[in-house]
Length: 278
Image 1: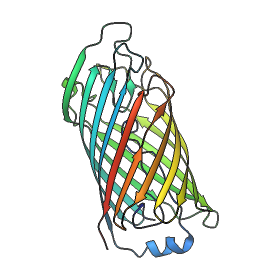
Image 2 (image 1 turned 90 degrees about the vertical axis):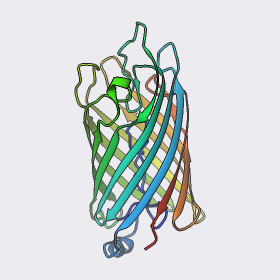
Image 3 (image 1 turned 45 degrees about the vertical axis):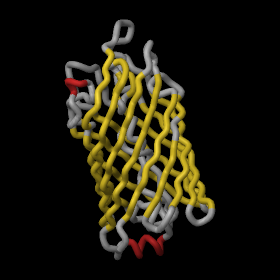
Image 4 (image 1 turned 120 degrees about the vertical axis):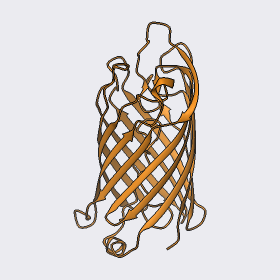
């Protein structure tokens, strides 16, 4: 099954880039008939450009501003979906906040170094395998492997300088134009003497409703274990709206509401996607 708002009846896994460095999982499940048709489709190519801004104190004395501009390419050749994301990153604030972890608490209780840096962020690779429909076509499942390559400059506090790995299972189904989905995953973080990082589990639950032919509204709840022994676990809610402007073009707007110090106080994000016509 292909994952695309634009050309098919499912939307691709959209994972929030500032916390999982991949968008939150979403999906519109297809029928068995569409599943059989997609097996015969040629490869799909999708390009996405996004923009994200957040501001928060993350439990520190000063705010941290994060600017994130990802450029992604996604290739679907049934039953595989592979993608690469190349981001541009900006950080202003204490030097113990990372986009994918929040405040790791490195300097909590002391004076944090203040940084104002711009540059290439960490590159992300992912590959998803789409299993055949289960329970008579009612339930769908995907398995995804994620890799974070340490392309961000750790000497400028734009990244940890280590490779991370992630494993994720997505489950989803649709009833009466409502899509219900959930994810469970594990993030294995590269160790570095500079930061007290830990591996962690995460999970999410969500609902998306279709209005008319082109508009989708949804809400995602996301939980993540703390990324450091000095950090906080994360509880967040992401409302979003997605609109298919044409069969090839899609726009999505979202914000994120956090309930612990691992989250920003204010966020806003959008993305444009274009799928090459077949």
